[in-house]
Length: 463
Image 1 (cartoon, rainbow, N blue to C red):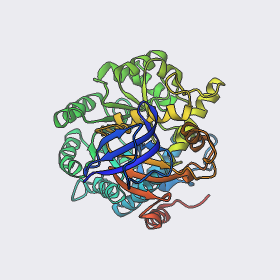
Image 2: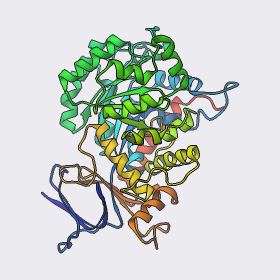
Image 3: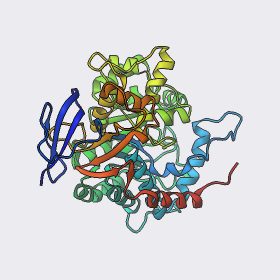
Image 4: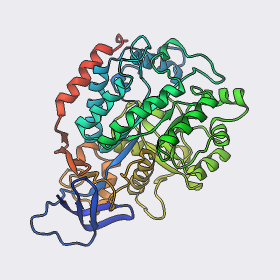
């Protein structure tokens, strides 16, 4: 059965188009994207400009329950490393039921906020005592069920984690639920693949970081993944913190991205998450590899990581997307806003991420983030084009902050830079099915209450 939607304005991969007829098949795949069309009689008409859904390329779902609990000074100088201690306490206590509730509430939030798919960087694998569950897939299944219940597209990235530092430092007690041998990880992937395929999810691998995966294990894992699926996505945390860069140099004499490029076949399958602290040669080589830079501006700001040098990355032709990571903020437009604002602060210029093809910065950023996010997801979610999933975000042209603006460029700019952001979203569709209507998901308060109940039982004492 073919479904149809007519849009006065739709953002295609080449830019804004007028009078666009969108059609998709029963599998949720776009079969017609026709600008300058006439709406057939009875065709539903979008309430405002139609955007491609934005992939969220980096998520740790359980960390959403930590929101509000880390914003106090617990040491003379707080940092990522002190924040990590609370994260370990949460990771050490969460149950399967709680993880599924948190992920379900989070994925509803993401859909209401304009994300239509998510890459779940999943590293809590085992029971509270660090031993495997009877079904080794237990916590992965929680995430698959949460994605299926909410309708968000999923790229599941089980995390390989073996050591606590460079040079094979043994894991600490806070990491006991993360640890897997390489052969055990590959067996997990083998068992998860048919489940992901049946659900329309994509399966990949996330070597946590160079400090957490020794070189031989990293090579073995990447080779094993390729034998299972040669195109599967590979995501890795890298060069997030200056302390990490310095430790890598002491261990190997090389910077993290430099070491990775020198020792692994980095290509378009890879997403380099954060990659905040690179030198000029690393920016150039990483961009030329075809890898995506996975930028998480609100988390990077929350943790004090630093500012990615987008001028160098774009100058080398680098691809990028955005993620909400620790979910200090769950808002696609706000993630784009902060990315642009960080570049303005660093360069003391305005409209930094516009380009010659798209002079409106919100339009340019949306198109780049969709393309990069789709590549990192390994799914057909690269925008409003034939053969891609019908993942759509419909803005509400009657919203007070969008009314009276002269063009869809201006309305998208208001959505990103001037509105309450989520409040301007009227509908969200994934795979050709409407998930959000009137700004709200069908699961609504029920999903949020499940997250709240889980957080209440996990929360550390107030400070």
